[in-house]
Length: 52
Image (tube, rainbow, N blue to C red; front, side):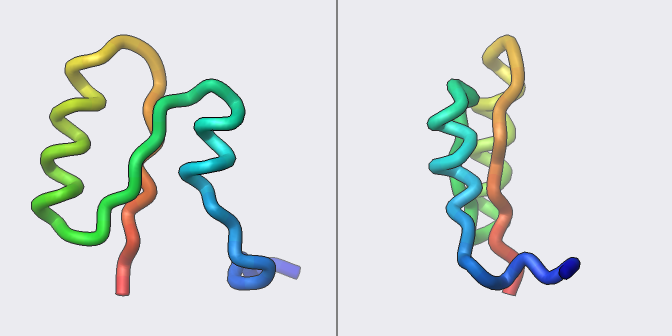
């Protein structure tokens, strides 16, 4: 009951659907760029960080 692998959830789409800006980062470079953009804007922001 604590496994989040099934069904596969799209956290970025869920956040966007609730009015929260969201993005997905698959590399450290993408994450750093998205974090900088998120910190420059007021309010919450979700960054889905994909870790292999």
